Image 1: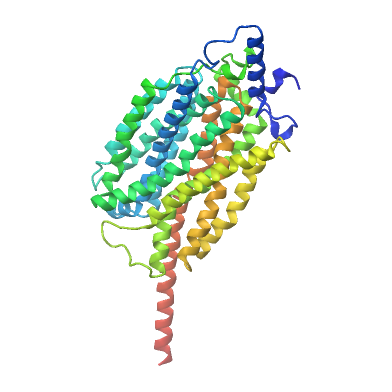
Image 2 (image 1 turned 45 degrees about the vertical axis):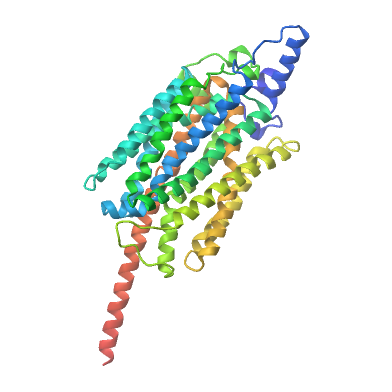
Length: 461
């Protein structure tokens, strides 16, 4: 394989060659050549100083944390929302489904813009809009549940503008092992932010006795993030740190971008695998605290929630578990992949697959033991989420090293569309509908059994 081919859109899953370290080695060789010629530039190839590049990663990580905090704050106060609007599980599941659908369908638009225009300005506008809409959703009156659905859908506009673009900025700042490390920092924010969403949502609701205040925390933090983006973050040069040939840095039409991505087997397979992850995490994230609360009521560990405010420790505990398991999972996944990479170029996909296979039985056991032991349920959730989190940073790294710089935002957008369309866009509603169906069937079974026993008792006389 030629040097030019190493950096093209290829499929290292089926090849003995890995692109993971190719760009880093090329950059080192290019830098050595410049030093030998006495032409070492005064600034890094990306055009961003090392200190500012590091600050950029931390700012993007902070915004990603806010992104997931906001997404799962609703899940942390879901029982309160159901009682406030007098809705059932299928309708409350729509809150996540509407958001994901908006986020999913807008991602290609922002992916197109992100490959062609200044990325920090696109993100700044999107986050500002997201913060304003989130704040507006916290003033929804009781009789207008549709307004909450609408505002949650509009939140997806801001998140689509960020999630499709932020990883590509990191890719233009670092390569190789350093890129993997920085992506690990960035993707720590997914489980940690999700966990903080449960914690902040439930605790703010407990303190104020009003779930509306839980939705007013992230907007203020989001506007601060916009200021950091505008005044600290600097737009890096696309693909400059990778020393790619010129034809890999030329813009092509959106149709040609899609055609190239459709032939990239590594990208397609990693996207399909991530879709399965999205289906599981979407339903687990929204329904786990509510499921645990109902299991505790079933086992008579706590009384049923009949008031407007359902104070529960389950969101707090589940949020803490999600934070810890996220850090452990992302860190362990990256470290295991790094050690295996010296033995096989397929280390990244193998680690992702192993994590998912190991998580499945533990998540199943968590469901089975919910009616028997709360402690065992939490232990199995802890193990299942740890293995599930091993793939977050690795899947992102795979995309960035198998796709050329000029179509990475489009690739991120396409991955978002597929993984959410077939994954967590429908899973929260499907699980909510299943809950409702099972509860109705349970009630019907109980009524039928009572009728049968009553009839039998009468006939015995």
